[in-house]
Image (tube, rainbow, N blue to C red; front, side, top):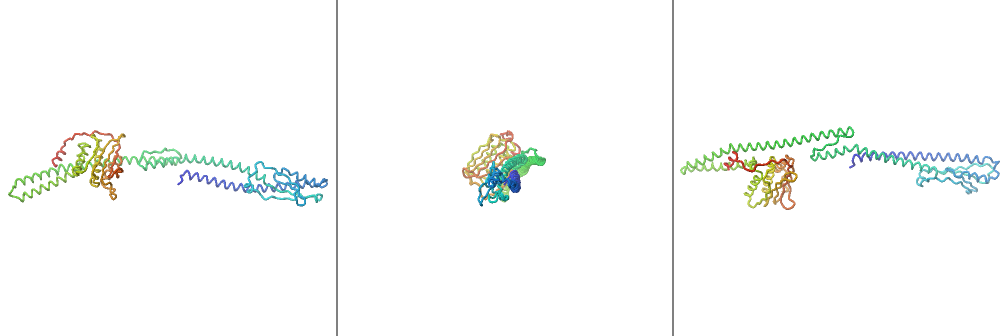
Length: 459
């Protein structure tokens, strides 16, 4: 597909070619008419000259000599050749002038006109001494046209080259803002809202550049606002989950504990004499145990921040210990810095590791899982979770809630997430990169709060 500059240049070039073709046709028509006019005028003038030369018959003392001199008078003529014929044979012919710059044969064949022949009328005194004929020759005239055409072509070539050069420069200057806009639009399409274009050039292009800059500024503000709103939404969700976890912990936990105490008391007081009541009390205790397990599970899902209270490294160690306890043949290699990165980074890192471990164990049946969290030289946070399981399933749902949650949290911080099969061996590799944010020291010691004490009571 041709660019706008190429199309305009081709249009100008085609216009010049058509103009040159029209000019060449007009030049050809004019040159042929000029040659015909010159030949007609030359034969007319030559006829009068020859007639005047032999008009005075009384002076013709030697008629043959006189005819030879008449033919010789046309030596060096540019357009006419005189010939003396005796008995139908050419006895003597004049010599035409030689062109300084002869035209090529193809050019002569293109512009030459049929020769005109004139038989000069001679007085009776020349009867029997021969006849004189005049014949036009267009070589010199065509050579003159050839010289004019060469000069004209040279001028037109220089003119066309200058015109094309000027338009090429002018179009490059005029279209450069459009090229800059094209590159800027491509960058904006890739998510880079820092692009700005120079507001220069013609009025129309300058207005277009101004509109583009205003559009990008609005997009940048909207993107920043969306990021802030996403962060606020995530924070609100975490707060709501934390509130729900506290409510479950503070309200349901004591009630379940009280029911358990009552059931124990009933079982102790009834004794052996009332087995039915004892059986019912045992059922109450069994039900309370199930409820306690469910409440602990809900608390773990709704408030992982309870684990983060002990620090990121210890929280991930707890995750590893949980999965190791439920999978005796599963090994782990964990490389996590003791010092956390501060909120909200620690929460996002923990969520990524949590979801990655869960997916690996549930879908891949691995024997080894490697967890690595580190800070790069540029200040970014790199999270990698690799397993040697069965890899990604071809028919797996691409929009699972776990992966979507990870992607949303990473996107909130402006990071990148990649989940793919490992290239070195079987298994899945999860890699996330979070942009560097000012680190906050995370207190390593565990502070025993009231909520945590109640959580211990529930366990």
